[in-house]
Image (cartoon, rainbow, N blue to C red; front, side, top):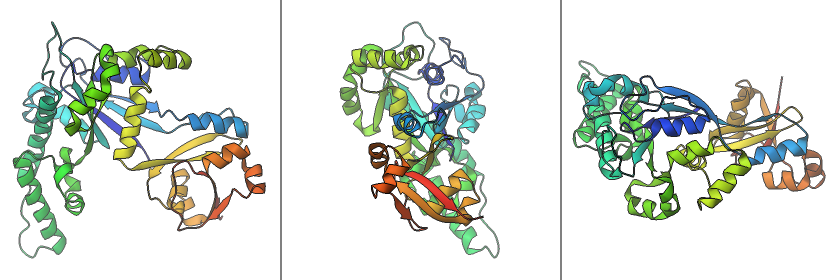
Length: 353
């Protein structure tokens, strides 16, 4: 499945700097004033997965195909965006296309820079959520009550619309408060606040080592800490240089790794792996996916043609050095249609003609 993350925040929160770093190139302009990003910048970023390089060596292939994530750098919002202020309508519309929102919040003061928002992440998050809620409220106000002999589905949908309208009017982010069954009834409205979200606090490089205290301070936001400028510096380094630099900063992993882990958890995703002479590859599925549907991630025809799945755990595959030794060591399982896929499964699907 495709994963897309929309980076949303006030101007000069560090969105474009982070975006450039993630793409390892200057794909988005950066400037010390609002609206340097006029159109959403879209980029595809490979998900770091050290398991793939290990598998590639075992099966003797040079081709590694990681999972990818689409990042959308959405231009900075300002108060009044829901009414079109600061080109807000255009930018709010782009949020509808992503799977999950990353609210990027500034955790430091800026000097001599035009800016919106504050240096307080909690205040800025509420302001950003409010803009999205006001846009959703506008959409909900335009919905009409079904007339005449309305069907059961139409009546349930209208009740869900009324609930959503009431929650939005109270300033409650819909994803946080609405029951899943009610969300499904209004999903066709593409409401912005029905999307799950992550919170990233952008700090100065010198504050990275104190990330744990920042997370504790804003624990109610369930945040992770980012230094967009550090990520920009890392982008120009080799893999070994990056590890050394992160160690020097007393940081265990990059913001990209934190972000991907958070997105996977929020979206309830896992990865299974395939390994052969052609390629070592990662595939993304929902946690709880059955084997036939997982096979469908490779080719849609495989769902109907599924017979069995030949499965080995990553640990066993690596320790046995491939399929042949896994087989002789009794480490391969033949799983049927009811098998629930696990993260890190190494799989060969057996399908009919």
